[in-house]
Image (cartoon, rainbow, N blue to C red; front, side, top):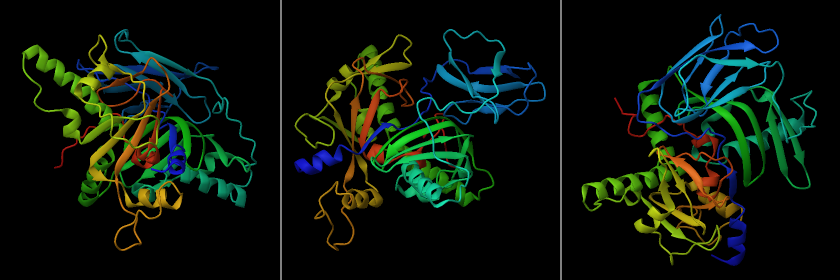
Length: 409
């Protein structure tokens, strides 16, 4: 890779691939959460409030008394969110280890989404204006990228968005005044992003929200099979797949040690990943392969045996060998100058599809806590480059998705 191409590849960064609440899956009896939601000013119960576990398909709506009930909660730590149009979103972070089974109480203050550091000054009085429409196109390009599944994603209520675009820096700021609803017909989910905030430019993105997934209904058997197939494709080779394989390696090694046996199968290799330490993200070098012993030094279990700390110093190059990169990614790399134009196949019109390459950088020296379903517990602790930064909302799966649990009929 040339120095120029290397530097430009550094721009393929995503500070945060999603504002999911990172959680750990407990192996104990599932919890049942119950509680009430009230108006903070009048103390009256609120009806039809959405109460859900952020980043999952688990949620419920309050009844006429403000009561909600959510069953089957297995996570160790989770964010429980209460959201209703016309009220500020309220969330509670709950740790199963200290949680006492009792009714939870939410008091929602009337108001709008708190935009915090993002200030939207653009006039949205006419969402049909050319400037608003251009910003919507920029927003969709940032949110969905150019992945194969992005073409099957549709924003149902784009008019809830406010935008501000800086012509000098090409930076778009966006915030939703109400929950933004997206229909992902590739994965079979209706995704609602509560309190969405986004800032980015064409190849850089940072966003956060409290997402809630609802499986699409009414699909044919063919649709159901396609959704299962696409979810499997979105999962395999993803950050979740990689981090899950890391925790599986530590668990399998510890089990083999206790049983006095030798580890016969390497979960990292079985999953299709190769890992290398490199000098900086964007650089391709195979001089420093990261093997089992090195990985076990990087992944340390916590006392609960359900979460781990991933810690390393040099950036990691992660290659996924079970699938080639999407043709749209290869085109994106060539068209934006991130890859030499002579990287084409024999026909000369289609860029060569290389293996999926991503880079991972830790932004805090103490490392990042992860769980066995492959999510990070610390926001802004990890920065991704390459293929993983190119994949975005269109490939987003709920926390409670499991490749093993989703069986074909």
